[in-house]
Image (cartoon, rainbow, N blue to C red; front, side, top):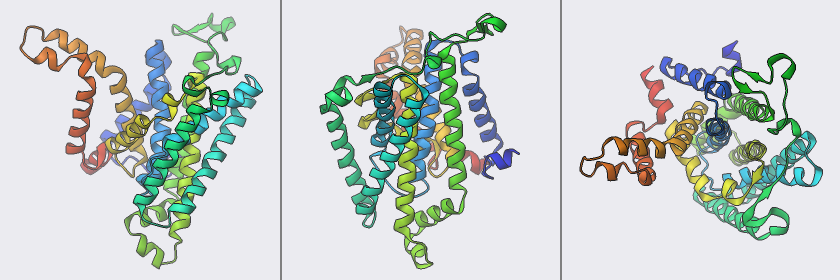
Length: 356
């Protein structure tokens, strides 16, 4: 059963299996295991970034294609839901229309970019995607009448996904294990289930004949071309699929935040974060997206707090309080990244799989 659900791609490491199972349980039960606004928000962000990072790994790790436009596709999906909800009202139909429209526009844009630039060297494609992503980010910031400009868009989600919605009063007195049964809980599970479905779909794709051809092209595109595979066709298809899934991740993020802005979906900082998560987790492994996104989002949210506590514990010791100051959390995040690349050159998943 598990072998079938995972498309035959098992973790192949006892330690990795335990870690992945632990993350799955923690995310599935996050509102009950870690009650609190900040912790549940962190879990939701981990879910969204698992999909986003996995979709980018489909492009980079499996296809060997370097793109700097992934946040653009992410933003298109998010703005699709925001605009649909703004103009159609707070309903699940608006979310569906926005998500599908965003995914289709992202795939179409990826198709145009791919057809024009994937026939030449990979670096040219990377530069084209960077230019287009930058242009779209500027355009979104300037079209304030449509996109809200730098301020972004705040919109209403269906009442069932809002904190004011209550359920289970008759049976559970409005709570379950001390957790309020409201729309915010439903919104979290909306994101979690969406993440699970999209991740399992991508796992199926990379373990299909299409995914194996992609890996063959990544290893040696000339040999793949010589035995009859149309390299450009497969690369363009992978780019479109990756863009569409990134847009759906953006849709989930928009539903959770009920807000969309250039800084939350289109910034180059997010693109760099995605690259770091892929490298940390391990390129060419869908499971790497889970580990990379989990570790990175946790570090982003809690490293500063931990460093502040550590700085207080070493007061009176020369230099250490300054080095461990909460203001230097980005420095230590960079150090952790360098150490992870040094000790795990094939990513955490690659290292754990080699150990068995």
